Length: 111
Image (cartoon, rainbow, N blue to C red; front, side):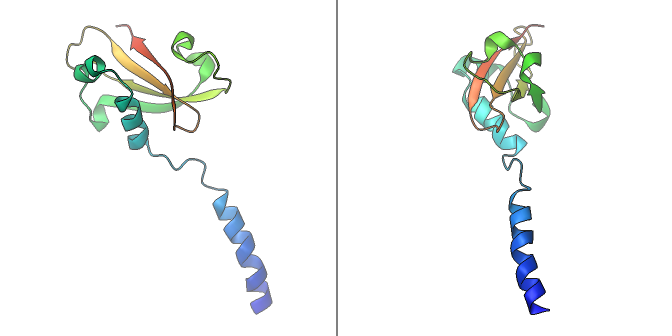
């Protein structure tokens, strides 16, 4: 019985270590994106969980001009902040790499 347990435990540990696809939470992605904005853009939006969306997208569906031209992966995170202060300039969008750790572009979504 001890031999079985001793041989199964390393396999379980190995499987569990490979299960964590992305440990970055939506809140930390949101804050990374927010902190990358200019002071003017930060003043246009309120930081709150209900004031932004975080989703993983296909790069082909994004504002291609807003993403760095040397970004070669198919997926990215799109964080959209609602323009709640002026409500005139449109929403602010920030793109993060497929792991959600680096800003790869930003722009505005026209109203």
